[in-house]
Structure formats: C-alpha cells, structure tokens
Amino acid sequence: MGINIMMLDRERGNTLQQRHHRLAYTGIAAAAVLAFGLLALNFPVFLDAYDQWGWQIKCGTGYLTDLTQAAASVGDVNYVEECESALLMRRMWTVPLVLVGATVGLVVLVASATSSARETLMAYRETA
Image (cartoon, rainbow, N blue to C red):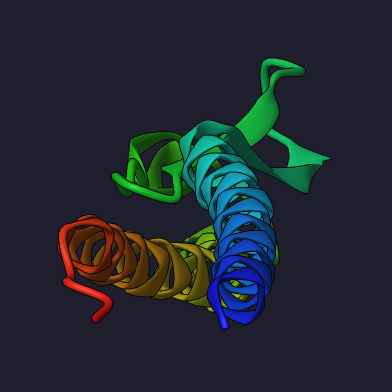
C-alpha cells in the first residue's frame, strides 16, 4: 500500500511539473505577443506621400496622433483623412495583440498562483 501511495504522489508530481512548464511557456509567449504589440504601437506611421519640401508625411504613432504635417501639406489629396485611416489600421491590428497578450498573461499568472498554492497545501496533507 505504501508503494502505491508513493507511485501516485510521483505521478501527481510529474503532472504538476508538466503543468508548470506549460504555464511558463504560455506566459513567455503571451509576454512576447504583448511586447510586440506595444512596440508596434510605438513605431511611427508614415504615408506613401511627400510634402512640398520632400519629407515623407508622418501621422504620429499608434499612441499619439500628430496631424500637423498632414494639415500643412498642400495638394489635391486630403492627407489628414489618409493619416487618420493609416493610424486606424495600425491600431486595428496592434490593440487586439496587446489585449490578447495581456489577457493570456493575466490568466497564466492567476493559474500559476492558484496551482502553486494548491501544491504547497498538498505537501503537508496527512496520508493515513
């Protein structure tokens, strides 16, 4: 009977260890997705057009909108609307990345905290 309990505890330990590894890998992947999304929001957004002085029109970043150059540019095209559209497209694919990465990271954090709490309680359980 003692051997069977030891084998069950060993199997339970292997399962917990595998769960910890999966949580760690999932947490690392979620952190990478979150970092990539935040970094992509930080890069500047440019139009494929140039102003009258030859500078490429900058619209801002995913965080901040800067339409001063677009508003000052002269031409047949409304560069302000194009900048707003370009910024919207940047935000449409980066904000979901950030949300997914943060949500999965939070779930992994809660899951690892609850599983480690259960594991420490199981170590002091009496097996009579």
